[in-house]
Image (cartoon, rainbow, N blue to C red; front, side, top):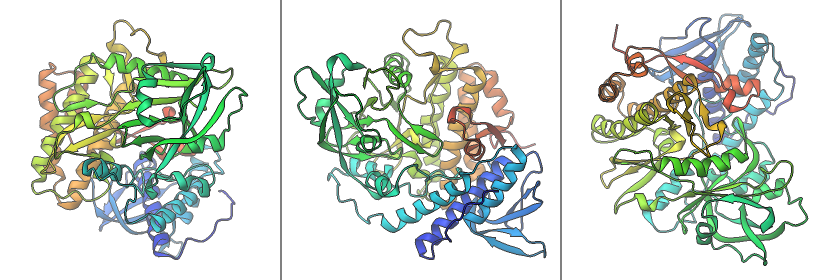
Length: 532
């Protein structure tokens, strides 16, 4: 067990709420990742229980809503059974220390960062709750765009199934200036790069002109960079010129390092050498080239009516020896071409973060899944394209009645090609974009069904308790229709037969300090299967 000394949890209301949320996130990870196969957790008398077998410690937490995927909503403190046979409350630090001790014995690995990271994530949430402005002072006055920005910047608690959802490396005093949850707005920083040191593809200059960049010296090209990145990694090459902060204001989205410029309706996906949840958020060269290559390829892959793709048609970086990932920048197309009057784009993760009340939740859900599910499943099984359609990678367009009418898929970093479904590998697409059959299957099942639809279903059920069974039946009917159209593929046959779904094990990958691509997957119940 780690021996670091931690401060006691804050006594403020924000601190108490943050501590409870942190404990619930860690406990939820235990329920999902560590209980099987040592003994499936059960909900008894309104509380979920789990045994830490190597410590012989039993934990419990009250369940506000039991979820068919095991992604329960929790209420009240996490508790442990004491040696005296009584239940005692645990704060997030105490729970994290128990989990660290259990995982050290269970895995044979020591992670001396884990408890500190849970603590830091909790403190970040407390700070965000205390400092989040009640109003957005950088609103554009365009209702649809302002609602979209608000959805991106609303995720104060972060991923509900991650042990450290708001842990970020670096000095909190520095990152708070760029935190989306604090409704920040700032200007990009710009470098002038000699033309012989520029690497890139696509119409970068015509697109970036909408950002109102500074004029570069003769023989140079402009490159927008996240200002935090330049504070972390100042330009080391003597021929790079610092042009300072300039251009239209940008708003950080939920990913922190991707910035949206409402005035230009353009996204700028920057490199940022900061670890956020599992990963250092930098754009590797294959991700830069892959974005443009996939944009070209996917322009020829049909999507059904009502589903669109935010393309990434251009990138630019500094072509210097050694690591060139410090300033790699991808441009992503905007929202307005996909909107009609009265439409409102909302990040799917924001819909899932709160109870989702709607007059007819079954009809609303049916419209939602009929847009999203066929697009993702057909992309995979008919075209060999694996869209990573988790909650943070889909923008939902609502009409004037707040019903879903379009889905916008985004972030080509997560898009992969299922290699077994391509007779010849597409020219120009990096090999790192390849998925084998097992990886493709797991990412579709986790991102689409567990992360995304499980989250939206839970939000609807939070507003209308007891609705889950009906919603999963409606989803099953949509999957059955896709399966029938595709001549009953074995992947969907197994899904409909009740084969367990899978979830990414965020606790284990964080404990192992692995890259996100090395994350293990764990089985979770499959509500799509017919009752036995």
